[in-house]
Length: 280
Length: 159
Image (cartoon, chains in turn cyan, red):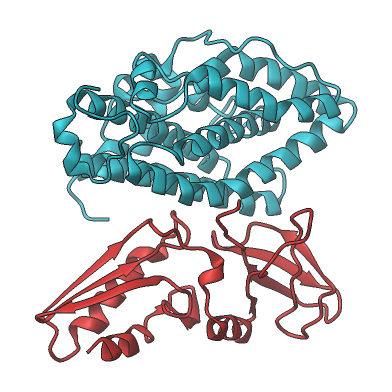
């Protein structure tokens, strides 16, 4: 970046004005991080009262609450940069403006949480476990982010993520090691998740700028770390490590999305849209 | 004045655990007082905790009623991060009075926790759920006195 040492740190949002290109890459990254956590926390909240047992209901809603808190912190960082109010960023943006991975917006399964929910627990476990590990890899990288306010947030999120990752790993290991239907459904869920998992690992069109400015490690490095972290788990469960991370339905980082996201936004922003200026 | 402010802050309890104050929990990072204006920097415990806004309001309330204070600003900051090691010894005792075990000071080699029952002090306890009724708590069962109880989750930098 012109006029900026590659090892230089930016400590305050005000300093960003001097570096418009840097700011653009940072904003893009923050939207990816925020939108990922936001939509997955929403999908998690739809499970409330429907999880396999009551202890899981307690755990999953706690995880979703934490995850929503992480999204709120990223939106807060965007607000400090002057991108608008955090509440508006979370509720008021159209699907085409969102940067979350397509895998995370997908419905939990057929039906509706109020009516005949036929949600898929295998898919939920695989999606959340694989995502939590990808988030861990990203967060570890962000601890060294050149934008210090984001590095500080990463340290904070990491401590909560520890419990999320442990939780989903436990479910994953137990279900793939069970025999019969459980294992079969888990293998199907892994295949389904892999069809779109490339979108979670992607940094989108501005990825190379993010790396150049020292915001985060490259997509390739992050993907390799994800594989290294997952390898022993796959080997112990006698599963084949997937060798392709696809984006069959497009790349959410570049604004491509499905109707699942549109209906989710319509539902979650219903109250907000009644009075966008209300104080919460 | 700082002393007066600290005494007042000791009256701001956690809305979900009303025996411990923001000072006991180690949430207060900095208090500055200049020309009638007080700035309090607080560290959020868990990020998604709905109690944070209530805590902010209560801090503003108790401090603005003090004589000599014209303006109160409460800031939540992320650095340094709050960890469970910040809970004071007094705070740990008060948690027990409330029936909540304080977080373990260290963990075993495989990440397991040694938790003492807040009722009978037995370590013959079992974790029922690492997640509890609020983001910061876990659910345990004491096999000695047969009471269920909650414990604060350890939260630390090494995680």
